[in-house]
Amino acid sequence: MTAIDSSSSTAISHPTTAGSMTTKSTFLGTIAAYLMATDHTRIGRLLISFSAIFAIGAAAEGALLGAERISSSSSLVDAGILVQLFSAFRFDLIFAVGAPLMLGIAVAIVPMQIGARSLAFARGAQFGFYLWLFGVVLVGTSYLNNGGPGGGNADMVDLFLVGLGLVIAGLTVISASIATTVLTSRRAGMTLMEAPIFSWSALIASLSLIFTLPVMAGALIFVAVDHTYERATFGATQGVNAWIGWAFTAPQIFIIAIPTLGILAQIVATMTRGKQPLRAGLFVGVGLMSVTVIGSVTQSSFSANFSGGLSEIAKSLIPFLFFNAFSILGVLVVLGLCLLALKNEKAKPTAPFVPAFLGVGMVLTGMVGNAAHKISNFGLVNTVFEEAVLVYICYGVLLSSLGAIAHFGPRIWGREIPSTAVVGLGLLGFVATVLASLPYFIAGFADQPSGVADGFNYSGPAWLWNSLVAAGHSLMALVVLLSVALATKSFRSGKVSTATSADLYESVNG
Image (cartoon, one colour):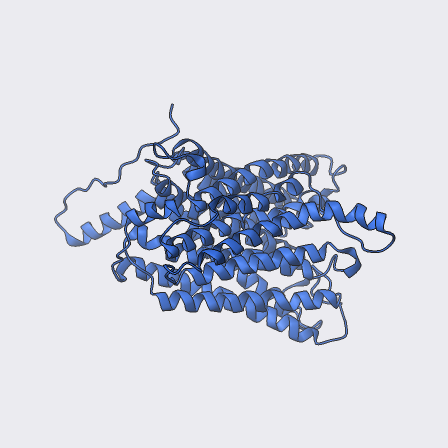
């Protein structure tokens, strides 16, 4: 048995006499080809497409929550479902958008970059896609019927646990397919250290998910068994989030942002038309960011306290720096090397650089914010500050994905996305991210509580911060919608690209 599943790139066609029958047959054939795809580009497009659809829904949820918190007297949604809405917002950003979007780009691009004949265990990746999609549908159904963490319908809470388990299984299988492809299916003569930086980052992210998602699955099994039978040991419905909540926050969310570093570095390597200076340093930067895996596996998140004597400060500062500063340092290393490479006189600016650079910048802002959140002297625990960290990371992933699609897309489909539109959408996405996040950094210092839509009060314009957040999420929903429409139109009837698959291989040397 080999790791490579062979697939045919040509479709079998049957002549028909009627034009309408031919059109119908072609349409149904295309649908069938995608549903039963073993071609890595099609599997990747499925993951990217559904993630984009869910991204619009997640942004709409964020806008609704922001609008609900503008005034304590507002009641846009029933108070009984607010708990589920807050939980659904987190789940969608991480498991319905961020993780599958990054994995989808990796599935589509990595085999081409490393010269593999196909994706390793392509049928397994296809099955993983269906597990993930079906799991997301089940989780959404449970939320709509008073399920999820803290839900009032016990049966729907069970459905949530089953759906989340399917999501974990699907993402793990897809991650294993990507990791196996990079490790075993590189073209002859290519060592692992010679692999393109994006493929390297995809490998690190995939291995990180493989290490952490089973930990979450193990906790989920215990919670599910207890909830189905005794409902005593793990806190029943109200205790679900206490045992699996770590997977919905930092440092776990940093893992899905690891490929953003590879996307930016790969675009810069193409812009400089040569080898990336200190390329090994990029590998080190990506590796440093993956240190966050330790915090996820151990479910540990150390805080720093600058009160007391030097010994007490050092005792809290050392583990705090280990679990927080290393990942920030990794991003700074990659950003610094990319900016250094742009000093090359041969560097030629490209539109995808804008959203990719801004995306990494948003990820870095979120990581720095998370470190600030862990400083107990600031008193930011249980405030909306942590929600802002989540949005910065996940919306940064969305921005980087726009850059990746604009950069890699022409090399796959042979048509370009207009540069002006890419830059414009990147800037709009940046504005949307800042509006959806920065106000909650401010409101966090003003002690606006997290997971609460009313009953809070603090000095300052609370209505302003929440209004800006609602506007930011609404704008991001529009940006994603326009990006999907633009990519669909461009790759169907856009300008024919001068870039070819050979350019993709040339970027391997960068």
